Length: 110
Image (cartoon, rainbow, N blue to C red; front, side):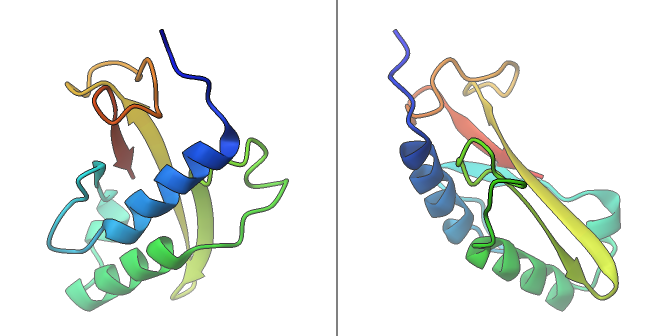
């Protein structure tokens, strides 16, 4: 049975996930993938983009209506960078039955 999801709980896990990411490794809570546009940036630029995502805190009613901290955007070198966290089962085939349960969920940030 899925656990009762509360926005604060999902936001807390998503914030923890984002803060664990680095250019050289994924997080124990999930992984990240870059679009072709982001992948074309220099290594240093990609490090900076991940840093901004990790520290992102500009959540509001317009960009985070469910208060999950799972989406954001910002300007970087005159480009708008969008990021989104999705919740998948451990095989990354289907949506997670319970995004709060780390035994059933892998987060993917793209």
